[in-house]
Amino acid sequence: MSRYRIGSFLFLIYILVGLYVAWIYDYITPALLKDVAEALLATFLWFVILLGGDLHVG
Image (cartoon, rainbow, N blue to C red; front, side, top):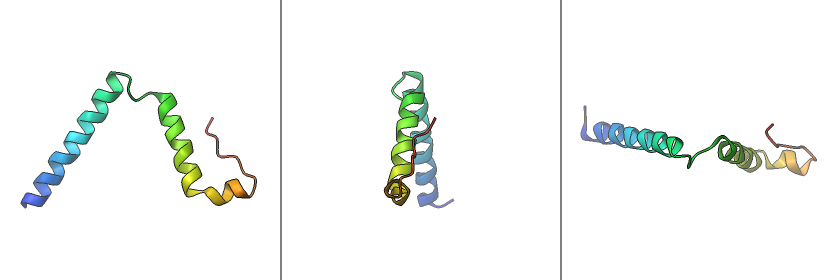
């Protein structure tokens, strides 16, 4: 493995462990994930909102 691949793999593990710890300590909640999903949908599908669509999840 090259140094770049090892570094990328370690960074991915670091991010995954951080997400797990944030979930366990309630920094990431289902309500937060819902809000983030709605924000991402609104960002990438903004034209649907302009046409009168509703992108609220749930």
